[in-house]
Length: 451
Image (cartoon, rainbow, N blue to C red; front, top):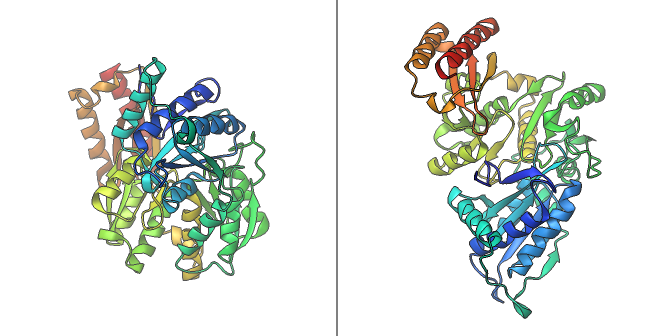
């Protein structure tokens, strides 16, 4: 039986993999593990939010029922971004938070993510304890059911969006007056709050992908589909465009000409800005092994260091907390600024990027040029014994040979998939043709050595 929790909570097709019964059971189990400190009447409090997926309506009802039945007071904040729920968990001093979302996944999917006190992601150990309790209850093990005045109460908190927007604007080093910005919210959780935050900060805002109907989240828009943003920026003569995903925990951008600015470039721009402001602790940026070599070279030129982690924003955050670092993220646009957020925050990232444009008077294209993206080729090699990636002498020789060919301006990464029987071959080089040729050769070596 596989682990229920993945790298970002529990996800699956709503009402098939992720059912109301599971949502209720997980909530009861989480209540037992995450209760922490109690309120004056002896009950802990949990903040519950969701993205606008249709399935979120019944899943939210199940989560609220499970928590209240387990003696937890529930504060419902409605449709808000994942980072907003994390923020409010801390701001309202709740024992924990619950977010219902499948992030950038298509509409039929949904997920449940728990935050610990303060709005922090759960450690693996806490997730394991929740899963153990969930399975035990499902097998018939009794749990302590409060009655009478011991059951949880449910309240609505309508000020969550306003609180969060004020927090975002308060995090900016300067206003955005004079900038025209297109904001694509992926018909998702930030449809209201992201355009409002940019407008409060002084920008002229053109909002697209901001009409969620429960079915259209991430559909041809947002950070996974930048085509509408590119077109809108050019059409409206905007200075830049910002796109978040369905739960707004990631951000990508385009410049005034409609050219993409990815998460690595955003990290480079913000890293330089934070170094100048004296807020980049240890002059270090944290990113994953999949970040482009161009990021490492750019930071090195600026006198900054790069710390690499395993793939996944949770591993970036773990390294940031371990080393006390202030900025980290992924190429996909998960960017974490620990001074203002406990998790990736797409709206905050976009605001900080726009603030840098406003403060310097330089275009996003000029700022992004601090980093040159090297050609990157990724090949998935299926049906191989991925467990032997690090133990094959034949493969080690092939990697060494590839690294000699690439020299100092290239990089090789072989990574076993966490969910599929395949190995991912990634090659970066100054020349695209060389990157393709080396990657193809390594893919053949993986098939030969591990097939």
